[in-house]
Length: 239
Image (cartoon, rainbow, N blue to C red; front, side):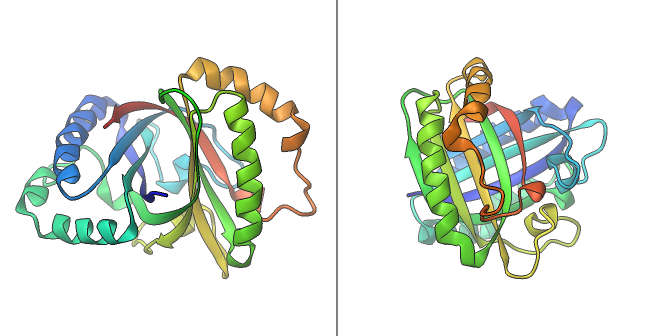
């Protein structure tokens, strides 16, 4: 299964094309370092939450859109080697000397896939999730996620990935742990469900919510659902 580097970024809505252009240039360089795939998802259906949400995770302003993105590596060793090369490569410094977003509020981390289930078809839309999970509940969470992945695929999802926090640094302004108000002993899960298009996703969700297999046992949930947040994203880059 892939090793995933996940990002959540606040981007001025007016800078969408500048952001996309920079990402399309960056991916060519990243692939030289071993990245298998890079996806940039522009916020499309990103609800505000009562406790946590994507906007709060990166302190997004009213004129900013949240971008949910990830890079996939074949393994952690490739990820670690790539990050070292990126830090030392002068092309990276030049590329990001004039970023179209506030890098201080971007959050990122390395995540080890515990579920990577592929369905049929290609991806054209993604639901992204960030979840706080007690470290001791890893196996229970994985089992629950595996069952959910089967349901998602049954209703048209093309892929389901659940990735366990492995290299998730603390930030000076924002970070993944603060985003979900993580408590002592909790880890962060970065996950996404890919769909062929938004129409398939929108048609699937009412059925998923009504499916008895997806009804939560609130007394046995392996995480605090009130601090989980999610949203729908349209890919503006997928290479």
